[in-house]
Amino acid sequence: MVSDNNRIDSNIVLPHLSYKIMGVLFKVHNKLGPSLFQRAIASELETQKLTFKKEVPIKIEYQGQSIGRYFLDFIVENLAVLEIKAERYYTPKFFKQALA
Image (cartoon, rainbow, N blue to C red; front, side, top):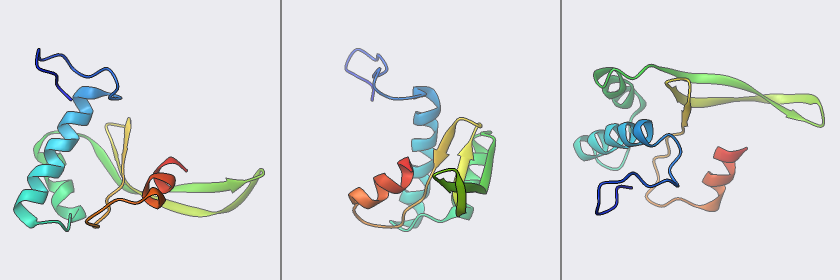
């Protein structure tokens, strides 16, 4: 967040990229409502000239064994993972999924 004296909050990881991504999400949300659509987000990321990959497969490992795959919704600028949830409220389950 930006404080009253226009300094960037030091608790935000990659603040400039984070703010750009948030701008994309708010713009899509304001136009389409609470259901965020991947295609609209991809289009807006392109408009903002942010590089991204979508539906990126990753291996899930447990105790050194591959036990499956998961698909990340977006990786932006090869720095930030963007997981889209079309829910009104976030639950601890969503945070656990993102941190896994």
